[in-house]
Image (cartoon, rainbow, N blue to C red; front, side, top):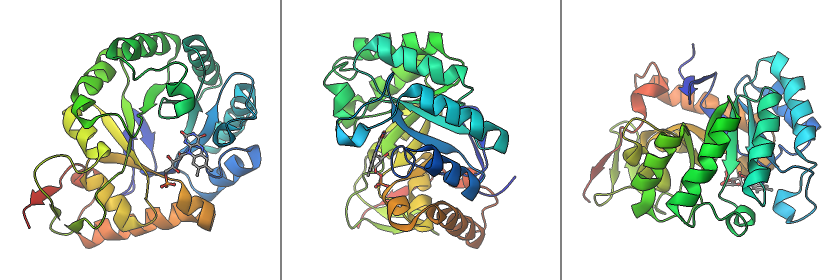
Length: 282
Ligand SMILES: Cc1cc2nc3c(=O)[nH]c(=O)nc-3n(C[C@H](O)[C@H](O)[C@H](O)COP(=O)(O)O)c2cc1C
């Protein structure tokens, strides 16, 4: 078991560093390349029932395509991590069920995209969110993750985390929206900031009170950014733009940099730093 391995939503991952849904993860070739490049999880592009030509950011060939890819990747040992969109509750439940049937280990509901927000509107009320998540939970065996809209009000983090707990959602995928120019010290595990959550990731970590696993997405392109995301409560990090810029080597590079930083700071496991940030006044 390496320094950067973790259990996320009950699923063992060789590394906390994964790709984000979408960037370089839309085609079978891209997903096989990711799987060959590292032994951690492989996150698929969001898909719906029969594919989409628009919006551009959600172009996908449909759930059957990703189910076939999941069956190809599973024997290689990577954890397969699907992502779901849809324009109705029925569609979201059905796509999740199909991925589950293909053996996908983590099913991420992409409730962050306006495509879902404007149709299903799961974050328009806590009752709607609860109803959708109950249906998905009843339909699948896999661990369920929810990608939270970055604009979801921070004050609702506790109520949302409570619904995740109640409905058996183990993982929240949250924005790593740390303040620009944040001064921090990784070795001292401190950040100069007023009291309160530093990011959506941090807000959900605090709100989850140890019962919710949080994944940070956004702006992670180095080991030190991953380290800081972990200090603010992330159990895993997803990499998007760096993957586009650099190719699949970005995942192993960030994992190695994180591993070196953990060693340098005398940590034998990434678990020792999760949520350990201390806020100090400037
Ligand atoms: C080209 C592209 C396609 C994306 N497609 C999806 C998608 O299908 N599903 C999803 O949940 N997020 C999608 N995203 C958002 C990423 O998963 C991620 O949240 C975002 O890029 C922020 O991470 P970054 O700062 O590392 O790029 C996409 C982003 C990009 C740039």
